[in-house]
Amino acid sequence: IGIGTNTPDHLLDLYKSTETTGTATGTTLQRLWNYVGGDLQQQKTFIDFVFQDDNDNQYPQVRIGAEVGQNGNASSTEKEGSGAFVVYTNNAPNSTPGTNSLTERFRVDYKGDVGIGTDNPERKLHVQNGSAGTVTSSSEADLVVESSLDTAINILSPDSRQSSLYFGSPSDSIGSQLAWKHSTKLLILGTAVTSGGEVVIKTGNNAEKMRITSAGGISFGSTGTAYGASGE
Image (tube, rainbow, N blue to C red; front, top):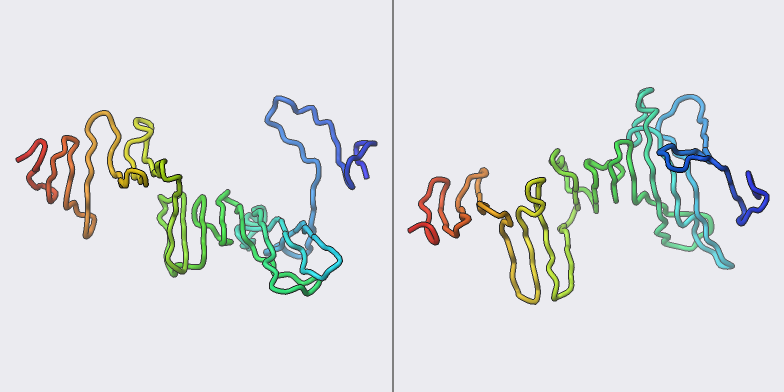
């Protein structure tokens, strides 16, 4: 079927010449409109992807869609204008035809926050493998990695290459780093600024216990005497 074209290449081709080249203007070519009547609450509209052969299997295997509200909360007219994009996949435990075990895996919510494994991301990217309990992530965080088990962030590289975390700002794109390189067996923790730059270790209630100065001196305690390169 061709709509806007008399030479369709697929089962359904939609064509429209929009003349929006070189502009930031977008053009809606298709709209899926779901009138639910009564009141909007937590309704969703889906597109399903189904794969079948001559044998029995569950379906759909993948579902994408839109959800009204602020992560399901559409309890006001304002929130009814919000929405999220959601992705489901089917982890089929059996071959019963037509049934499905669809589970939400991915969400871009009304604020633009992304959730993987959670339908209520707290920050810009929230990766969840079970709940850690009653806890709220830091408001300064853009990335949250949460689990009900042991959890970690794994940075992998070849034996001859370095795995790193860099910390920077407009004045120093790489002001400090934490790195590991297998071939040298070195764990690197340090600053990377042209002048100054010190490393501080704190314990207890954020209290300084040790400082390594830019000259290589070491002091203990917030007002301790420096030892080493520039000290005693």
